[in-house]
Length: 520
Image 1 (cartoon, helix red, strand yellow):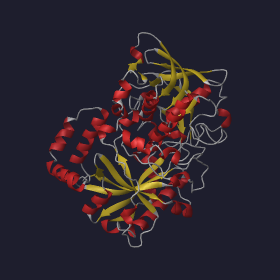
Image 2 (cartoon, helix red, strand yellow; image 1 turned 45 degrees about the vertical axis):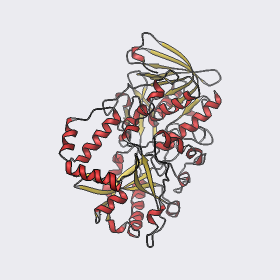
Image 3 (spheres, helix red, strand yellow; image 1 turned 120 degrees about the horizontal axis):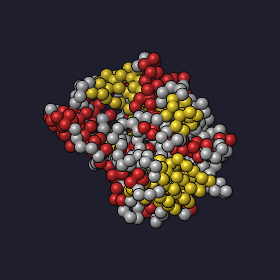
């Protein structure tokens, strides 16, 4: 059931087994998983059914350090949340990602198998092929190739399956499904004498109020907003819950993506066959290379991944086709501009169709330039943090989040070091005849890192650990300070890992749902 709080004729009260804050990618998933077990689940979402603009006014933050562009770009408040714009890469962390080789102050309290045991469930939801993520055979014929980098293939659902609200539409609309309230912004929290969260209040822009008394609460509103909500819970209770430990909001990090090398193509056809997007049925896959644990340990380096990307020199049929498919993901009709551009690109479209059917590859757009992108996990430092503003608030009177974030001096060193190792790896592998790689000047890499590279995978600010002296949530994602308050966001991950964190978060939803059902 989907309802709009602003359209309610009067204030509302509810009792529920579970309250989920956030109807985005992972909020909707765990709400459906809990509902399947017969639980009464209430979901509150501050956005509307769709977000037309690229930025939402409730995502405003106060920037105190270098500008963290992911604070507003890449964050969406609506039914489906970020999945309405999400690129779609799904790939689990490798076991080595839980081993911190760079000597950082970060520890995972669980093994990677605690999450990856749910990989098949995620693949079935998104209708993905159940094929391996590692492809060691790619380099088996290499003369002198080493194991410095591990070739892996991410899985991308078709555009029609990327919006979680569309994918789960039948279950969220049925009577037995979760009770979803749109336009409902959480702003008040009350504690019971036992220390449990007793009731939560959400408000609409026109003043309607929804009060919920749940047994268990899950904050699934994204890394930044979930952190802000925990800070708000603390502020409303005299900063006595989380503040004494000094961990909440700190250790904020992101993946840092930057083009570190130019790619001079020697064999365009073969480069497209190997590094271009490939198709396995309806599943798209793209090649990436993650540094081995041996390489990282030997040189004290973080993990991440390298991939070859391309940029069209001018608008092309490829750009139009991608825009049309992304519009389908958002629930929009194709624009006249995109249809016109696609119609004028019939020769490329015919070639692209041949490549799709025969080669099972996505054809690079014409007149495109290629780059090597290095995506590196950022060190989780205590000085990089999310806090509450002392003088600025949103329309509901709640303090805005402040973000004090800096790239750090070592990020560029790590990006360049990994790039140099990768260039050596490339030159000694079967990939060498395809293209020559030339590293970019250091100042250009540093400038690129500060922009964030256009991908945003924030984490760390509510990290998990073994005790409240080092973490905000335990290995089961339950906060140490409030027994019935759980956090389901990438902010719980102590480190960024060598891959996109979305699949890890989705698997965490299955794991948390299993635990919560046992507590009902």
